[in-house]
Length: 150
Image (cartoon, rainbow, N blue to C red; front, side):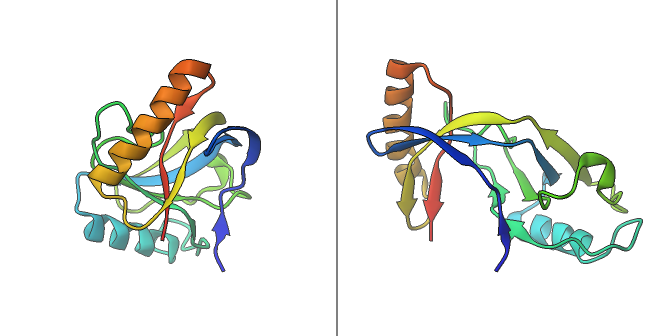
């Protein structure tokens, strides 16, 4: 079992969960295919870093797709990120040997989330995002993201 990002539920609006997430530390690659980026990041956490230290795998792995009005705050278009385990603070993260990997810190934040099953295809994401956006506009509560479960 892999470690997952811990959050606390801050309320609900119908099917929408309002979640509080802590600060996250990410190892991110941009500009590569998902397969290439995954391989580069997997090598990094497997010990191909300046300290030759293995870092446990966590979930979720974050990929981004440019979707109007719904892109998560935590990733740019065409990026692929591994979330570092919670016990690692930015100063504890081994320095990457590959300059294409950058370590970034994402501040704590509150997000509106709807879970859905299946692959996050653009049509599904757009439908779920529209629901979150409408509720968020009415309530003014927080940022938005879309989460799918396999």
